[in-house]
Length: 391
Image (cartoon, rainbow, N blue to C red):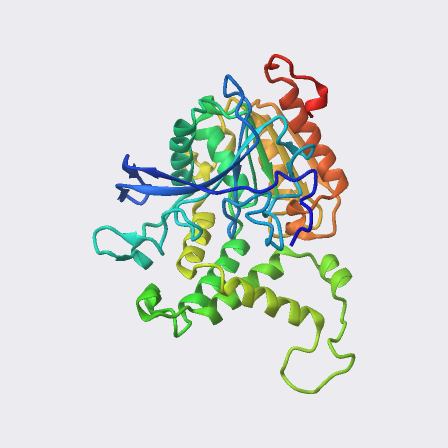
């Protein structure tokens, strides 16, 4: 827990629930008649609402991106390294909006919400979501907040896919699109990893075909295995070697099947913690949204054509040891943006941490990211009395 909240933190924050009665048509053909989004905001919206930045989360993310919910919090929000006063996304200059996507399990309408038609949790009956569905819901949120155009839409991994979809679906509603450690579609290998995770969950005896709420149980073993598989793909070989090597927990081999290497203990700890805080049906939904994302699919697999409607400027960032969303995938996106004659900046950051690098304040990464965001802020209309000391 923070004895004293750091000066570069957004401080104590309180989530807000936004309720929408306006029906939301979905890609799967179904409609959500009413729905909630759980949201946090940091900083102040300026007079002409031109300084708003939308943060889109990755697979297991949520609305709590920065700051603390209480003085008892052990850890700040998941992207606290990048959001706050003087940080890459400077809350002295930007009004930052972070939300939990539909289908999530942290307050937004999802599988663990009550289905008004049955008065029971939706469970597996909750509609399959797509990145497009999320972007449409986020546009409704922007309307509610009075934001006609985002200064930037920013996301890493699955969040980067949402940012990219924003640039295509609502090109007039964002000035900058920041895509970090992401891709324009998943590789077959990535889809395969997601399917292994889904199988681990669905084959757990406690899954009950997704109706485990009614059985007052949770498929913990399946969730744990899914998270362990996922976590391996988020780290690089170099990163795992540097962090764990072949270190033994007790300094010697015990000749049994209990965890003996530090890396085994780490994965079990991560899996157990995740299985007690995340919803299994949500995990299935989020991985399917990842699998389905492919904006070029409706354009003869021509990504440049798919990106033609975009009018925003782009920043694309990749990391050298990220093999889940490799630099090659980012370069493919950059090439398509160039072919579509879009304004794009690209940085490939040398980092040993693998895919998780996008969550870590690596100096070169923060320099590139912060420099780009500061240029966006510098272009904002200056409020009366605003000066450089406000940065």
